[in-house]
Length: 127
Length: 141
Image 1 (tube, rainbow over the protein chains, first blue to last red):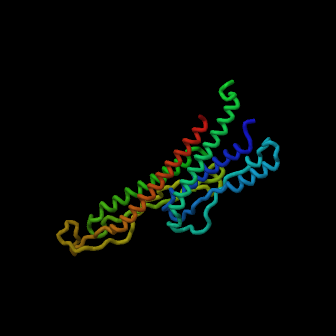
Image 2: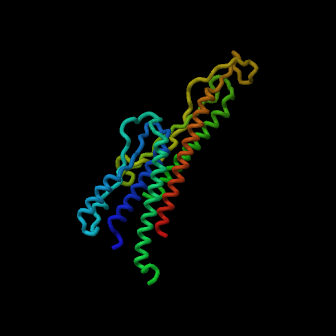
Image 3: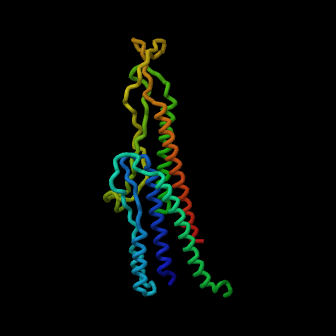
């Protein structure tokens, strides 16, 4: 009753961004570790496809199985392992800043969605 | 999967950075400590290892997820130091030679800058991790 496609998608994206932040933290912690291969987290494409399929089903978001099934995927950057210095600290810090901003935007959207539900429940404070 | 996992990862990076800085400081402090041949101070370096989380609750094969970093060992650089003729030195051998440590000051300086930058990068990841955890908890309000 309180869940529709949009807030299920926002929740998934927040989880994905949290995983991505963990991967970036790990890449930065291992900046000087020989042989370490940077990790990347992917979820946006899978989430977008899931939202499209869910919209086509148009059962009013009764199931949301498509979105629930999306799992953020960790990948190791192929090759380039074995020597220190295959990491770009600039890239990691840029990704860190972007992840942080996305997370902030999404948590605000989610809070807004819950706020709207609260408004509906309390009748806009006039009930 | 805890909400504070990324904070643990970043703090392992900070810890490793501090150990590196300690070792560099030790090398620089000993840059001039001469001793009898064969007993001179040897340059130390930190050996880092990536922590590899495992699948299936710590028993399965290594997962692709990133983990923290661990200081595996502090290793001595075995290369010989320079021999200096200094017969008046109390530690000089029969031929009047003492050994200088194999520490190279420019190398230590470069390492120190790199270690400082890595520390800063981990500190900003930690700060972002704190912000993310805080905002996630703020949804409850």
